[in-house]
Amino acid sequence: MRVIAGEARGRPLRAPKGEATRPTSDRIKGSLFAMLEALLLRAAAGAGEVEDPWAGVRVLDLYAGAGARGIEALSRGAAWADFVDEARAACAAVEANLRATGLADRGRVWCRPVQAFLRGGVAGAGPYGIILADPPYADPAVAAVVAALVGGGWLAADGILAVEHSRRVALAEHYGNWRRVRERRHGDTVVSIWVGPAQVEALPAAARTEEEDVDA
Image 1 (cartoon, rainbow, N blue to C red):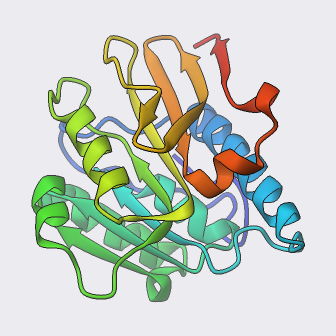
Image 2: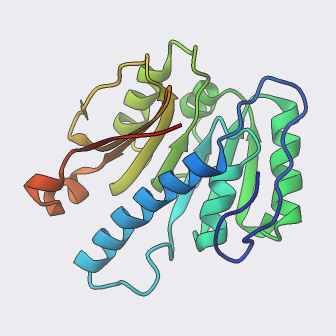
């Protein structure tokens, strides 16, 4: 694993010890961030601010693993990232990777189960501009976590929620007034992206749903 773009570009990332974590491949991460940046640029252009679409963006990286997704966002210019994972090995890896990339002053690691984090809340956390989640493929609570995120005030109205999940997991096109606008399939892995009501209103009708199969 490595950082793909931005100020920490090319820096290697340490994987957590053990086999409990499934690292996101650089190919899938690259595809994810291409979609995120396209949506951020569209939103920034609509607001008349196109110089740096990542400026001021707060990120929440759930089931963080090595922290590769949140660190990628920080490297590209996000203002802050919170990382949540219950495995101590993963938390240690994220902290080491933040230090190694020189981004430790813009991130914090929360070593606790995701659902406990969402139930307890964090003073000063949220609403986030982007939430990234890579839950265990066998976790039956994936849909409930997605619903909790969009219904619990964790995301800004113009926010983006991206979830990496198994093709065998069925997630809804709509959660309240949040709409899935991207679904990119890489073999058994699917990256689904929902946007908030402010972004939905700005999207052309023809661009509101995009599905694509990509060779694994």
